[in-house]
Length: 341
Image (cartoon, rainbow, N blue to C red; front, side, top):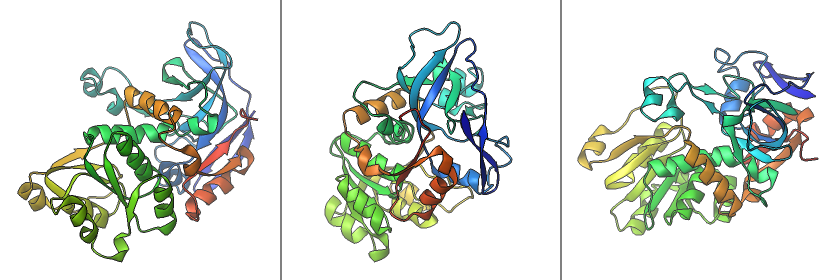
C-alpha cells in the first residue's frame, strides 16, 4: 500500500509499505479522503520539525471504512464507514483527571505526534473511531474534524439563539464557525478581506464585510444598535483581527480566541476592563463536539460541497498542498487515498 511521507521542509515522497495487522483493541482502516489544514502547511514548511518524527505520515482530517479488527474489538465490522477523532490522551494528568482530556498535558495528536491518515491503510485504536451515519458521503465525512473544532468554539462562546456573532477571519474554520453559529440560531457576520472567501461565505448564508474597505463598526453599529456584538471569534491570527474582535463586543461580550498566535500579541486590557469582557480560549474539541459535527454534516446544516474546492489523488500529495497554499479559489483540499474508488 502507498503512504505519503513528509521528509523535511517542502519534501514529500510516496513509499510502499506493508499494511499492518491491527493488534488488540485496534482497527485497520481503508482510508478514503484526508483533508489538509493549516497545521499541515506549517509542518510542510519545516516549522514543526522538532515535533514530528521524520519520515512522518501526516493527516488528521479523514474518512474511511473498517477493513479489519483486532482482538477484543466489538461493535465494529468490516465495511463500517468511520472518521477518527485524532486525540489520544493519557487519562492520568491533572487535566485528564479534572475531566478535560482533550487538553491533556501529555496529549498525542494523531497525524502530528504520530503517523496519520495520508496512506491507503491506517491502524488506529478502536477508541478513536466515530461512526458516520448512513447517507453521509465519505467526502463530507472528511470534514468532521475541522467542523468539530468549530462546534467546540461555538460551545465555548455560549452562542445562543438571537445572538449577534462576529467571526474575524473567513478561512475554513471561520466559515465553519459561522455555519455552526447559524445552526444555533445566531445571526452572523464574517469579516474577511479576501473576495473569494467572502463569496463562499455568502453562498453559505453568511453576511460578510471587507475590513479593508473601512472601519467595520460602520457596518456593525447599525446591526447592533451601537451596542456591539454578543460574541466575537478571532480566527485570523493577526494583531489587527484581535483588535477588531475586541472592539466589536458589547458590554460583557465574549471574545473567543480560536487562531493560534505563535508570538505574544497586544491585547487591549482597558477595553476588557471597561466593558467587562470575557476572554475565552478554545482548543480542539471533546467527543461530544465531534459527534455533533457528524450530525450537522448528516443534516446538511453545513453544505460540504461549498467548502471542498479540490480533490487530488494520493500520488499528487505535493500538488494538493500547493493548491491549498496558493489560496486561489480554494477553501478545503482533500486527498483521495483510494478507498472511495
